[in-house]
Image 1 (cartoon, rainbow, N blue to C red):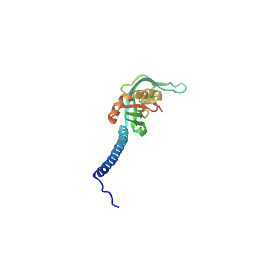
Image 2: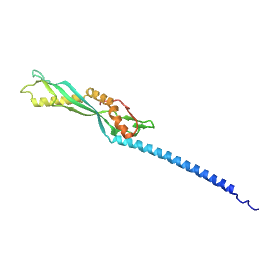
Image 3: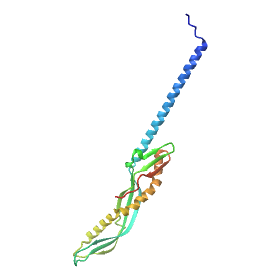
Image 4: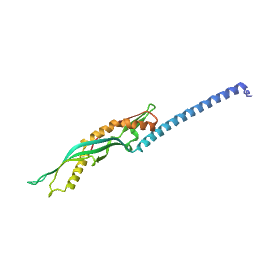
Length: 206
């Protein structure tokens, strides 16, 4: 039985069908590559943002000035007189946020912007300003006290005072207030998006 020869119109139809199938396949591949490229870009961007923020390390958010009167006293038994130093202490307390503690899950991003949950602020240093601290009153006894040692112990008492949790707490609270103003402009340059910051936990003093 003889086969019917393929007409020109049949060939045109076949070529059209092949063209449509090819176009569909190319379109699917193109869309898939776009989606894959977008996903990879978002992943790299997120990782890059977290890494760049971590590299900033500890950032000071506040320098808190302290001025207060403290008393250092040596009490002696029986009839021996007490010794005492009354000092106006001038000092500084620095509060920081340690961005090295930032976790991958602390950074959330979408098309609208980036939200960053910061580690709790912490005290990064305390300092007694000897040049601005003054002795208001000193009572010592020649045979019982070494004045230099008495003053040295008074300054050590001042250092202990600056490390008291109740004295440090206002600096930590102020650091939380300053975080958005100081950090958001820096983070927005890194992320290239609008950024908001907050703390998962409130400041805690050991």
